[in-house]
Length: 575
Image 1 (tube, rainbow, N blue to C red):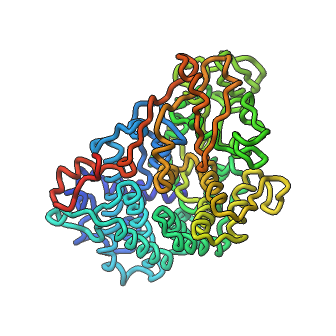
Image 2: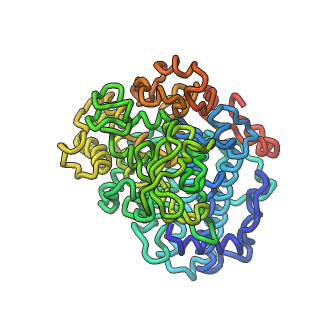
Image 3: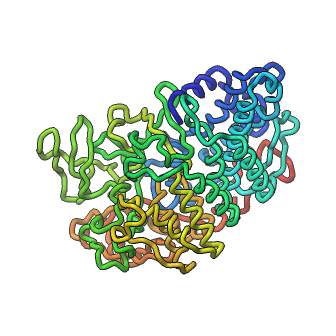
């Protein structure tokens, strides 16, 4: 969101919404203004809807929480002992704080939306009709968004569509299918009520395309292929959104609020900031290297011939970045990269265990200490994520203002393609949607098929493999992977077992065997077994990760179970 709009949200929070929810009982309506005296003017409606956005910016351990969710999947890992690491290890319980906080943040947002929707008619007579409709549309979109996250993580949850008194708060869990219908209804209203775009300080509010895109996403997550295809096509056909030409710069200040961004939350000094740069940056860039891509993520990028590394003759274990999909180098920071460091320097990234020094290129060429090797807490995998790292944030790396995108156009294109593939309605529009995303990564136009490996097959099974790999490599670090491995029912395969990191033995660093990739682009490292068995060959990250069948849903927070004694409010199986 634009920073001026974010400042308004911060002001509202400080003045009106300082209350903190403690449990299910007091979720509604104690953190809201008094409905008897509020919601009577246009300004009050605007302040209330602004506050309803605030729960989107919930941060876990200094990250936007969707970024943190990536570490509970197979594509990223968090080094510090946090809830995300516990979930990845399969050690989470109903008392895990992150699981409770996401529940509470979502329901707090829903409570704010319900209070506004239930009382805004008081100001209808004094509010311009177009603005009144817009505020209602924003509120319905936000409520749908919060509910979509809840059912995706916890399954059946209580459906609350109005403000409740304390004695009404003991609710049963509502079937997920019923809530999904409710979400679609809210989003359809939002599509009809919201504008295509905004200007001035309103830039960043929910638009009708945000509602279309989220409808497509939540339909895809729930195998409503026809709805997902129709909603994404509705957005595509508007010809308003487009792909930003430079994939790397899309996730820097240069790419903020581009036409690719459909819905995002910006940050603002003195209001809400992000510590993402400190947590994710290289050690020579004054970072902690705390959240890192896994080898399984890095090995999923194709070679430039369009084949996976286990099949392509272009792949080299001695130089794994060579001849790879350009998105790998634009997304992953690793050996051979020139990177920016503290004090305005640029330096050569290398994780080879013998490289105790590295080359500094600017302001003068010199050898400097290579903290990526000598620091005990440098990246355990030997890779870092470049997304949301901008050189401008080196000065205040705990106070980034860089926007985090919740929804962007590339996802919509891939949603459309996947829905049509699952419907077996494969035509030129499906291939074009995939190829637009692939071509952008190569920095070429979709028609320049000699310059990138365009997808041409119309086989449903082949395209299903391709689209799953595309989502993995295109959207890594954006908070969607956990939902994908759950809905595809592959989490038990990709999340179980040893999670090893970078090679610590110089004799094997450049000669690791090729992994084999399955139909979901999930690597098997059975060929590494003889190497892993030798102590000291690898940095071990998780040993082992565990994913059991009941982990496909998170537990209902124990604090909610303790308070809500409704017989229909039960715990998810296995917890």
